[in-house]
Length: 198
Image 1 (cartoon, rainbow, N blue to C red):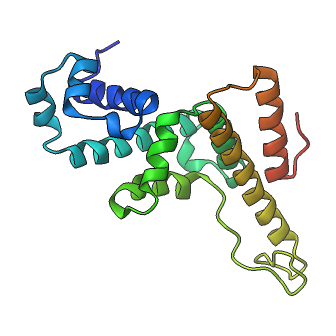
Image 2 (cartoon, one colour):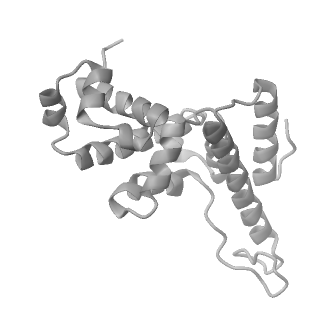
């Protein structure tokens, strides 16, 4: 296996620092100490701290995208909505880190930072339902009986549950027992797809 480039090592180390000590602890000095690289070497890759933070957001979002894709059987570009939801749910249950949570929270109001995360979410997660009918039921796209809208809402609720599982583990640092996590994942997927939990 090829050794990661110094840029990738620095980005991974930056995520370690943020996860362990918080975003304010990320400096060229702390990153040099974590990686063994010189400050000059870091400046070559990241000419400013802002450039480092943007690169870290892009790196972690790309890693998350690749992780989600790894849960798809076959070509991820050809995955249907149910396969995409299942992959999204499985990924959120497998990779929660405090660094990602802190960076995602920091990015919310910063267009240059949030874009990388939004691209992953738009590619994989069920969208927010657009409308509800006068009775408060989702309207859906076809037939007017609300069935498509109900399925759309169920998929979105499953997304919220998956996000909640990810936040729970990232915030608390307590991984659920494997059997509990797997059962929760299957229930969330069942909710979002309308299929019985396995």
